[in-house]
Every structure is written in structure tokens, then in C-alpha cells.
Image (cartoon, rainbow, N blue to C red; front, side):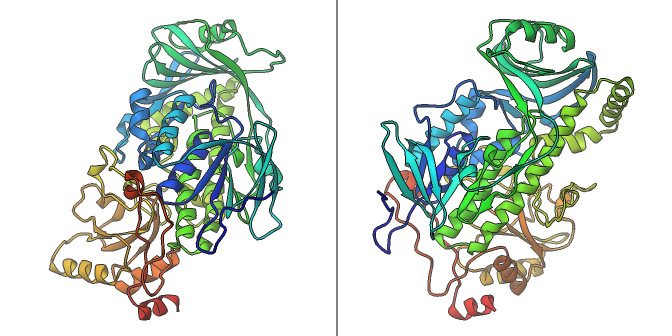
Length: 562
């Protein structure tokens, strides 16, 4: 029997999110924060997954988690990561100092168990009125106007859920991906890593992610704090049913670590198969993929969960805007083009880092070590490595290949790049007041004077603000220090997306600005604002009630549509 989620023309079906790991939780919480109905199902709704692999939350993810109020609790519960250190045969090669990042409230990573991350986001989900339902996806019919998901409950009963949209955030073995007929594509041989968490006695670095290379393989060490560490070692093969024992980790710590340590009884251990795969598409009609359902890659650099969090926020603001009528439906096509290229780039960079740790030939080892040392001494490792590790260099520039997404030699902002501006659905992110704030659900218009903030510039700001459609926030950021290297000395208007990426850079002139907003996906409707979905009259709901952009007049709407 099918239970439709709306019985009359005034009610709406929800978004169905499959998978309540970190990515699914962020997606559901973001959508609820914007007043969009969500059903979140997971095959195990009893609690966070224990003994999970993701352990590092990087600065960009902290920025995005700050939108839903989850970053500060994670920082309190986790261990600060100030740097990434590289060693070869126990000799220091170089370092990436995360603490030198200057354009973020979070110049550090956080090492925290994934079950703790999930618990924090579950709390935010509940604060927005969400819950997790137990259910295993057993079927997905996409032949009709809307997808219908078949879900099996714990008691063996089944329910058919008709939804406007279905999002698969259900991991590398995604049922949504399989049932939607989307292939996972990729090349390259799998690499095995033994991963374990437990106490290590010794003088290991308490605030650094350490990579140790040797001719026999690689070792990664991440500190949870309190003498507990995540250990990851490359292994040639593993055929045992049980997880690797402490003795195996001890052997490689003795052989590869620059500092001695005694491995205690492990809390858990497993074998991780590092693969290089990206879905052929992250959108098929009304079905989307996010996180490991859309891409899997090496654990090097701890980028997996962080990449999935970027998927979640990218999709959530677009989908919520379409549901509310704030954005044209075509904006959803940009989710695949944005995130698939980003995932492919991370696949390549993590694969390269993995291969560096597996070099065995003498000339390969010498070249790798000399390259890292030279990059460290010249500052190249810090200049490009810190944004790469932090995921600050992810860009949505118009691109036909991965080459088009590479960072430039200068800091100058281009369309698609991340701008250091921050948003939150409720209270502002602590520390973010040093940068301009933007709307977490709508396009924001930022005005930059360039060299002179004179009377002419004030008149320009007034004319642009007056011409901007209702509901589009307009801010003059000319007085903020630090933007000159990014924006230059020419007056500009920037259309900035809710995730902080630049959608357009145009002259600060009313017609150019309105055109840029329209091309960025805004929907300008005559006759008032779009009706927002009904939400409960609770403090959380009132905090997240959002106005929707609309045209100021019918004449303006006609002009914008032409």
C-alpha cells in the first residue's frame, strides 16, 4: 500500500534521505533548517555507528557544520590538529601548518571519532524537529512522475514512500545507487590498509597528523587526545577474518614512526580497501547521490567524510531553494557538475598521496623525498598544501576538465571560488564576525568599492540596493580588511551562493546585478513572495523561517524574464 505524503493540492511530499551517517544527517538537518519536510531512514536507527573510519574534520567542513550549529560541539569533544607532518625513514621531510590558515574561523582540523560526529549532528537534527526512522530500502520505482521507495521495517512489514526527491547517502554499497541504475566508475588497483584505534604510550605528537613513509610502506598516525590514536598502515595482503592485531601495528610503528610508541589493546581494528571510484552521475532525475554513495577513494588525507559534507550542503541549499520557489529547478543540474568534478579531483590527489607512500625503488624514494623537502623550503607545500588539505581550494569554476579547477598562482578570486564569508541558520558562528556574513539559504549580493569609498561609491551602493529584488541581502564589504588581495582595486559586485562560493562577479550596476542574479538561478516572481512551507510554531522553526526572493514589481519580473 502506498501512503502519499500529501492528500491535497496545498500539501507537499517530503524529501526522502536514505542513510543516517554524517552526510545524510547534515543533509536532513540543512533541509529542515530551511523548512523543507524530510524523512530520514537508516537500516540501523538505534544510534551512531561505532568503530567507523572517518576521524578528521577539516576546516571547510567545520565552516559548513557551523551553519547548523555543529562545529563548536565537535571542537569541544575532539582534539585539535595544528599540522600535517611528513617523514621518510624517520627523517623529517616537511609540514603543512593548518594553524597558519588566515581566512577561516577554524585554522585547524579536529580529530574526533565518527560516532561522536554523528551524535553531535543527531542532536542538531532533533533540534530542527527531525528524527531517524528504521528502514532498509528494498525497491525504488522511478518510472512515474515521482519516485516511490519501498522500505522494509524491523518487524518485516513494508511501506511505500512517494517523495518529491530521493537522496542516497547510504554509503559505498548504496542501495539507492544500485536501484537507480547508476554505475560507479574508476580505474586503478585497490590498496589495503589496516586501521585501528587504541592507546599508544610514548612521545607521539599530540596535535599533528603524521605520515611516515618507508620502503616497506606507509604509516599514518592521528591523535584523538588522551593518548589514544588512529593508526593506519599499508599492508600487502590480508586474508584473516579477524581484524589486524596490536602486534601488527606495533611492528610498523617500530619500523616507520619517527618517535617510539607502545601500542596497547586496540578498541577496534579492520581492513580498509582503498578504491578510486566516482559515480557516472550524481543525479538521475529526482534521485541524487551524496557521500560514499557517489564516490570512494583512498583514506590518505582523511578527505572522505569531508567531501561528503560538502556534497550535503551543496545539494541542500539548491534543493531547498527549488522546493520553496526561491531558485529555478535548473539549478539542480549544477549539483552534479559541481560535485562530481570536485570528487574526481580528490580521487586523483588522494591516489597520488597513497602511491607516494608505496614507493619502493631507490630512485622513486629519492625523488619523492627531494620534492617534498624542496616544496617545504620554498613555501610551496604550505601555499598549496594547506588549502588542499583544508578543502578550501575546492572551486566550482566553469570547467571542462580537472585542469580548469586547479588553483591559480595568485589569490585573486574567480567565479566558482570559495570566498571567506560565513553563514548560519540560527546563531552566528563563533569567530566568524571577522568576515562578512551571508544568507544561508539565498543568494547574497556583496559590493566592493576597490580603491575609493567616496560619495560616488555610496551613491552606487544605494542604486544597486534599491534595484535588488526583495529578499536578496545586499552588503557593502569595502571596509573589511584582507579582501584587497582577493578582489583587487576595481569596484565589483559579487553574487555569492549560500555556501560561500562566488556565483558571479559583475560591475556594480543595477542591470548587470539583476542579470547576474537571474543567471545564478534566482526565481523572481511578480505579486509578492513565494509561500514558504508550513512549519511548527517552535523556537527552532521561528529561527529558520526564511523569506523568499521575489520581484519588486510585475514590470521588473517581465524585464528579468526577457
